[in-house]
Amino acid sequence: MALHTQETRSKFLQLIFQDYYRVNANQVDIPERLHMREFGMESWDYVWRCPERRTRDASGAEKSIGCGQSGRSFKKFKVCPNCGSPEVQMTSWTRHLGYRSPDALRNDLVVSAPHSVYHSAAFYNIPVSRSMDEKDWQGAELVFDIDADHLDCPCSQDHDAWRCNNPECNEMGKGVPAEEKCTKCGSESITIRRWLCDRCLGDAKRYTLKLYDEFLTSDFGFDPRNIQLNYSGHRGYHVRVRDPRIFKLDADGRIEIVQYINGLGFSSERFITETSMALLTGNIPGWPRKLMVAMIEFIRNIDSYDGKERWVEPLRKYKTAAIEGLLRVPPTLRIPVKGFLGVKSWQEIATQAVALYGGKIDIPVTHDIHRVIRLIGSLHGKTGFNVVPLSRDAVESFNPFRDALAFTAGSLKVRVMGGGVEIPKFRIGDTEYGPYGDDQVELPMAAAVFILCKGVATIE
Ligand SMILES: [Zn+2]
Ligand SMILES: [Zn+2]
Ligand SMILES: [Zn+2]
Image (cartoon, rainbow, N blue to C red):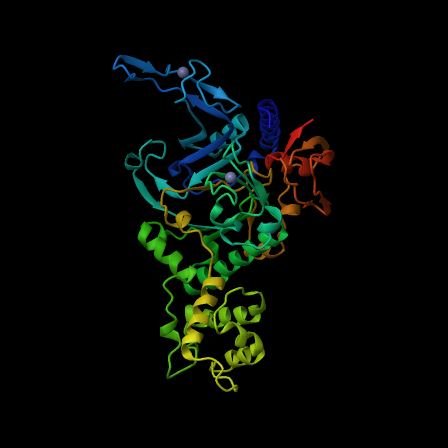
C-alpha cells in the first residue's frame, strides 16, 4: 500500500478517536492507586531518532554515522530522512508515563488520542522512572489474558491470512501456516492478518467463564468483588484479580497458578491406576473433578479428534458406554465390552483431555509482574471497539460486534484492499458485510472504522 494512504488513514483514525475521547473520556476506568501505575501509549504516528556514533570505514579512517536528529512521522521509513543513515530507530510506543489525577489522564487521552493505552498491573513508588529498579515495585494485580491467538480456533483457517515477507517469494494464503513459516520458501518472516468472528470470540468467552467459575472463585476462592472482567477490544477477554493478598506474589508464584489452571504437570498416573480403573473424583475440589468433565467433553467430541492413537477407534465406537461409565458414582472406566481399553490407554486419554479442555491462559501475561494491560473504557486501535467492563453475568450475553461499538453515527466511503486475499465477512450490529475483494464501498461508520483499523481499507 502506498505510504500516503496509510498516513491518511492513521490521521483520520486519530481524529475520530479524539472526537470520541472528547465526549467519552469520563467513561474510562480509573485504576485503583492511579498515582502508582505506569502508563504506556501506542500512538498512530512514530517517533524517530537517528543515533549518532563514530566508527571506522574499510581503510581504517574514522567516520561518523547518524545525525542525532529526531522527530515524528506517520510514515515508517528505513533510513533517516535527514542524513540517510540506515540506523534510524522508530517506535510508536511511549512508556513510563504517570498521572496524579483522573483528570490528568483524561486530558492526555483527549490531547493524544492514542491507538492504544495501557497501564501497569503493578504499583510502583515512582512509576515514571525509566528503570524497573528505580520504579520500586510495590506489588501487582494478578492478570489473565484469554485471547483467541492462543486457542487454536478452527475458524482461524477460514478468516486469517498471511503473506511471506521474502521479496523474492511473496507467497500468500489463507489461515496461518504451520509453525508460522512460509509454505513455499520456509521463511520465518511472514505477516499474519488475524481476524475475529463470533466463533473465536465465543471460545475466548467460554474459557474466560471457565477461569472465573471453576478456578478463580471456586478453587482459589477469590471474592467476586475483587475480580474485574473486560472485553479486550480485539480477540479476547481480560481478567484482573484485585485481592491485596496476591499483590506481593512473585513471578514464580504466578507461573504456578497458570500451570495449575492450564493443567500443566498433570499426571494421569496419579488419577488412574491399574487397581482402581476409576477416576479419583468424589468431593475432592480442583483437578480430580475437572478431569472427569474434561474427559466427558473429550469423548463427546472424539469424532473431530484427529490423533491416530490406538484408542481412538474403540472410543468412537463405544462413546456412549464410556460416557455412561464416567457419569456413574463413583465413575468407572470399566465398560462392559471385552478387551475395550486398558489403564495405559485411559491415562493417555486423560492427558489429551486435560490438554484440550484445561484453561488456556497465556503464561507471559500473567507471570510478568511489570506487564501493562489495556485501560478499560479506552479504544482499541486494531478494531475501533471499546474495551468494555463486564460483570460475570454480562459476559454471557455480551456480543462485541454489537456491544463494543464506539462509532455509531454516519457512514464512510472506503476502498477495501485485501492485498490478494479476500477480506472475510464480518458482522457489525445485525448486518453482515463482505467478503470483499478490492472494492469501493460505503459503510456505516462502525464497519468502516473496523476495517480501517484492521488495516485492510483506506479512505477514498
Ligand atoms: Zn540522521
Ligand atoms: Zn516465502
Ligand atoms: Zn474466528
